[in-house]
Length: 179
Image 1 (tube, rainbow, N blue to C red):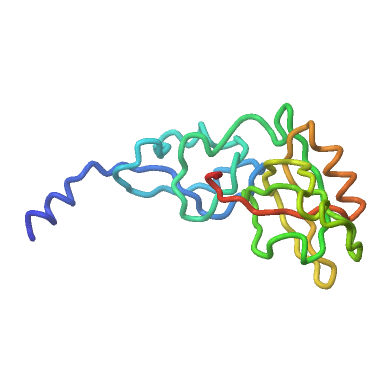
Image 2 (cartoon, rainbow, N blue to C red):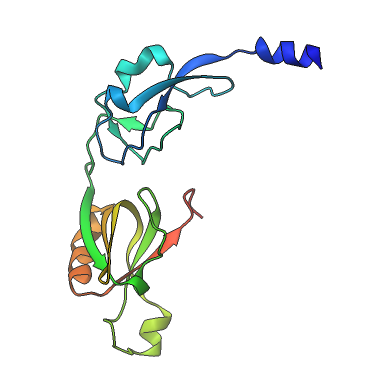
């Protein structure tokens, strides 16, 4: 047991950057957002002495307090990137999963307006407005549903916006890693 303890103490621990607080996707990472921790076994973790490479960058994904900062979490490109658009939609409670949060992947569907029974064919094969969209922000509005900002492909942005304004959008959540 003592040998195991000694081995653990001598492991290759290095100081790396972690998050001292949550940082939303698309936000600029500030020095005050960063902390340092000793870890071992994380090949793509950003070393503590390279904080200047992260400060001033944009969070490419939502970052959470305590998370180890890895290569690819930050970018110099602002959101939306070329070929992408940010679209706002407001949905009633039946049209989006309740636990959606920033970074979640969703499929955006065109659905009948509230109260329209529509045809069985329309309901069986709804139109896909955006196969993959990323939730950037979520605001729950008491008694009114949910207001979301979605990052979508430029080619889908106009349709998502117009169907959203008409109250004809529903979201289906996908696994973070995709199917």
